Image: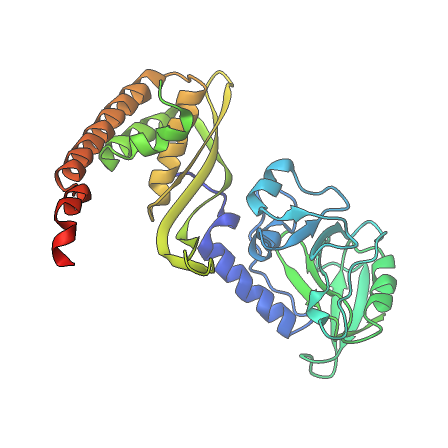
Length: 184
Length: 152
């Protein structure tokens, strides 16, 4: 009866969840199943899939509107303690996300970083690791170089670390903690 | 006027179609936005047993909820919500809309008030009927006292 935006509908969310699984399994691959958020924050469709009342969310760059919070239902926490962190890739990270513990590496944060594009080149990354045959190249527009340096620190003690999901208006790519990243 | 907490329950005493058609009329003229995603699922009721006070679940029941915001043509904003034992989110949304209309006295609230009064009357009739059945099956155990000594 009520008209909900497509990003909140189960069929859209199932497609996007599939895209997220592919992206995590094939680091650096670009998935195109992101529905453009109609006037909403880039990355909100991904949050709509991953987040609910059972997890916590941080929005250090104030990208979400008040109405988004009530639809997501997640409790707000600081970026240092949240399960999910939603950030603007153009701005350098100024927080230390939780990295999990040796007995519970899954208790780490997942970062959803909105970027300008995943086709045009501002930053070129060479990725190696599980899910990648030899190596692959990921080009990103709108990612502050400080993100790559910060990520190196966060994932240096495997299995501790964070998983990055880069989201543009129409595409997404993932860089899990197992991936080795080199700036070209 | 019935307390707001009783509105949903009273309106649910009416045929669903009546509520849904009224809500449909209102939806066509106003902007209605969900505050949270309307959901339907199963609820679980936790009770404690009387012997050891250990918790147990008394089974599952259907549960639907909705929380909406209404904006009328003149820009008036109102909020309404409903949580009902049903698997239909549509009905929860319609009841949430009725809740908002009645609480904020939005145009057409009299129609909802009439439905509410009808629902209250149905519930009162059912309550009276249940009371009558209960009283007709009541057992007076005090009569056993008169014959209590015969078994000994």
